[in-house]
Length: 379
Image 1 (cartoon, helix red, strand yellow):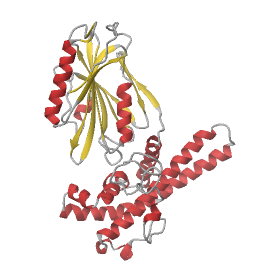
Image 2 (cartoon, one colour):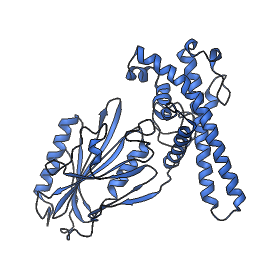
Image 3 (cartoon, helix red, strand yellow):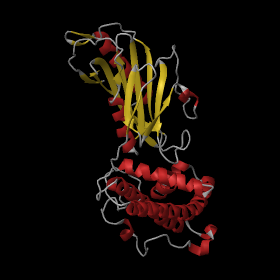
Image 4 (cartoon, one colour):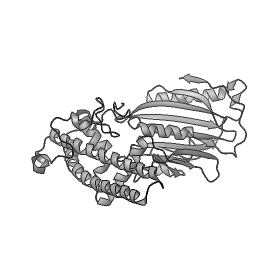
């Protein structure tokens, strides 16, 4: 959904906008919508005896603490931008002042994380013995959003250094959500292709090592695989370790290569060849059967090479997965790009699509067939 205050795209279960802190529907400061609550983290009810607190009492405390985490993250991001803006234009004293202020936000974040994670652990212990995570999310959507998703990275911390690390990563993520970019490019040693992506959101893992990572059981690689040989995987840049879903939902771009089974040309004088159109329709039908959703496909050109793309979204667990497949046909080989991200993280959906759109086959590829006439069809 869209925040009324800053127009950011936000998870519909959010209690407040994690970008600007406003009430999503009213567009007003979120704290003003809480009856009887003052700004800042309140004292724990029942003198901190969490076992005596009701879920509503814990929820009120947690959402207030989460709102303070949002505020300190936004302030930290503003300090980073100000440091970048002044550059060499201001005296060193001003830069030192901003750096000192940023260090103070780190200390504040460490304190807030401490007061946040205590009741979160109490809440998790209670619902894990009484209901499933999905049931908990349905009964208490805003609390689940804050405690299990948006600010979950502040829960399992064991030292000030970990809190420091998580906060800094969250600040960079905050900047990326507000449209900040840091352009990076990756290419294999033989320069057979190139990818450009936003390094604030994605980073490159070369080779096919991703197939051995937790959660990648459905990912294959090799000369006999339908997709081909995995060349590189883009993953969330703010992850501390593989599959660190506490900091970011999974979002990936996989790039495969294999020999071109169609031969040339994939385009004829009138547009896409029948073989290419048949590939597009057959893959769309396969995906629709696998996922039970409509798949949209189109033929296009990528750096003058013929290509086909497939777009679809489907439920995955409790969330909605957004996927894009693209196959690029050069005379020698096929490049297959598969990208996905969760709809609840629109910044990753956009980053994945932009990375796929940036794909360029290397100069070593031979000249492409004549320019095609794009054809689109909804299978």
